[in-house]
Image (cartoon, rainbow, N blue to C red; front, side, top):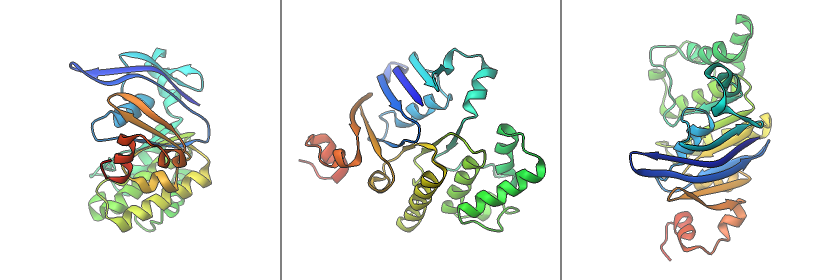
Length: 242
């Protein structure tokens, strides 16, 4: 379980997150939505330890990770994997070695088992015989799938996605959405997705959190979101001003 308690963050004099409180329960699949620049990705980076709050606590399984030493914090953060917005693959490394980096960092598998795991996760994301290729050899959608394969290779308890469909065409977006849904259902991991893609909201998650001006203005199911009478929420999900 992830607990965010009173998370406050500002850059220069601009408040990005203002006393955010959020509970993410084991097995949840949640979407964090909102306009660009409202702090969705900043919130995600507090969850995975890339950022520390100016005030407030981030608890993972009841442990406040920001009060741990660097090395102890890394132990807890190994429970998580993140799929970055633009893949974050290393151009100079093969696909195999990109995934191997994550396995070397977060597991004690034998080398032979790591190679088996790489083939397994690439097969899961419908990519075969790409181990020896490099990121430049793949399309943007394929690179996103490699990023997902790398994230799930370590068998994390929590998997975080930062705008996983950004820059993808509608067909590739549909494929990536189906992939995220299948992985969420199959692996039963706790999943947090920062997204603008309403297809993800409607078809994948069981809970939606909406951020506006540094605050959570909605928290509930996708059905409850669709039934909201709030004019701003209606404007966001429909693209029509009321």
